[in-house]
Length: 251
Image (cartoon, rainbow, N blue to C red; front, side, top):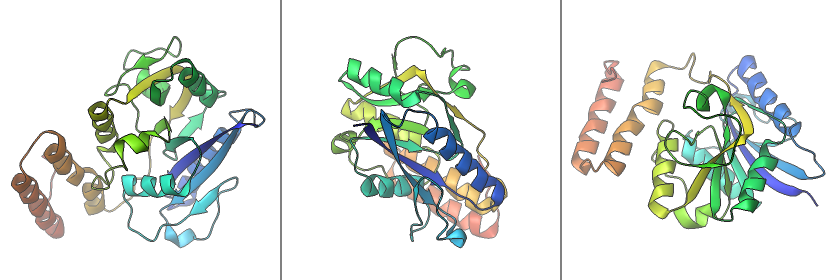
């Protein structure tokens, strides 16, 4: 029997180009492994309700009724899936041959390894890593939030992803949480998944971009840098007031 892996992909097919990006990701995933050895249960969580009930081929596609939040939608995917292994993914990835096999091998060799990242040439090469050699334990500068492979039991240790974080800082928060609970994470250099340039924010309303990218900064600083609750609330209220009048600028 093949090893079953849940693949959770967040998509925002607001136009034909972005729909094709998601479809490309799915095709490369399904072509990446021998289905006799590894089987992917692919769940696409689509944010564009206007295309409902369009199903991405080879997947189960759902359209949440709730407003988008990266961690919120990933938590939905975790609840909607069931396999012992799962991978949280962006929709702009190219999976290379045997990427999952290499991570499973690393986890077999090291039972303490609970969370892992494939190698992305567009990111890890700049960080000084090469697509060869043994797994490299690490978090910041090692973990790429666009593709996180894990054992499901990680969530028994750390709990659900923090839904106060809606887009930016989700990967940093995951790193901090793994460190807090002592969960081992490694880069597996022989597992290669290419992360393309994200286009989901292009054409989005400026105030919505700021909501997705700047508000999480205030919350992350409050949570992990021990800024006071009053300072966090004051920053949020000021942000909301400026956003309403179109006055907000990043500082």
